[in-house]
Amino acid sequence: MRGLRAELKAEESRRLDQYLASRLEISRSKIQKAIKEGKILVNGAKSKSSYILRIDDVILIEIEEDSGNIEPADVKFEILYEDSQVLAVNKPCGLTVHPAPGVRPPTFLNGLLRIRPEIEGVGSKERPGIVHRLDKDTSGIMIVAKTDAAYLNLQRQFSERIVRKSYIAIVEGHTSLRGEIPLSIGRDSHRRGKFSVGAYKTREALTFYEKIGEVRDYSALLVCPKTGRTHQIRVHLSSMGYPIAGDTIYGKQGGPIGRLALHAYCISFIHPQKGERIELCSQIPEEFSDFLGELVRKFKNRKFC
Image 1 (cartoon, rainbow, N blue to C red):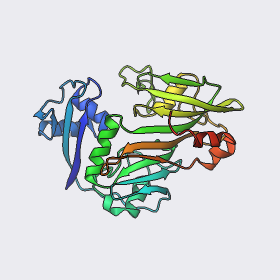
Image 2: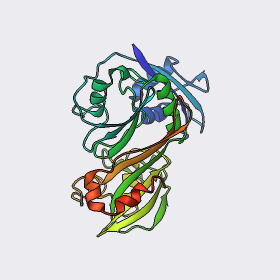
Image 3: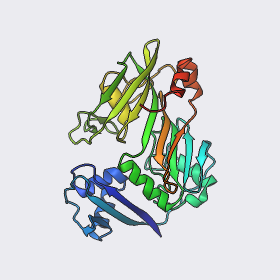
């Protein structure tokens, strides 16, 4: 039996069980059970599910998980970088990252375990090696931990915002040359599966963008989220009146490239073992290049905001 082992710093004041349920995407009942059993500690001590976290409280987690196999499957994706600790891939559009209720396999994780079976059980039995995700319809770069030490290290880097990320987005309308969107995000209580800036319970979210150019009625943006909320870029840009082209949830169907025009372009992190900063970028999809034309060259010269 393996389990989830992690160390997190609280980023907001919230009930312990609620915070972990949203942060780790583990059921609240399972988290409450682990808290009661002393498998989740706050600042080194046992706590209660109702404990209200303070910013920077240290949460130690060690939750056992029942052995359950994720079946390997033949899934196509490009490997961009690999060493003994880290794997970086270019996830294609339309591929869900990991199995979940209502998600039909195969997923990226099914494909990962086919080519790298040694990753099974790293960090989490349910989502081995996965330290961050991309939406199903967002393409682009993802990093995966290959060892427990790398998993904990990278998870901490994401939590402490050491990791830098940039995206290419094609949005409807003509935006300003650059902007900052500091709007908190939460689950939309009126629309299942959606998030909004006007939700009752929100979490801090911050996004920067720079306009690289314009093509017809669209703007091509380099977008750099400083936090990692679900649907953050899509919600933020839509809330400003510039929905991402082809976003059927926060915008409208169609668009110039026939898909959600959002691509995870570059990522930068501290190597878990070497201690040096690694910067990796993915290939810009052909459909983006065909539409953007000469603007692609400008993106290649500008990696982060």
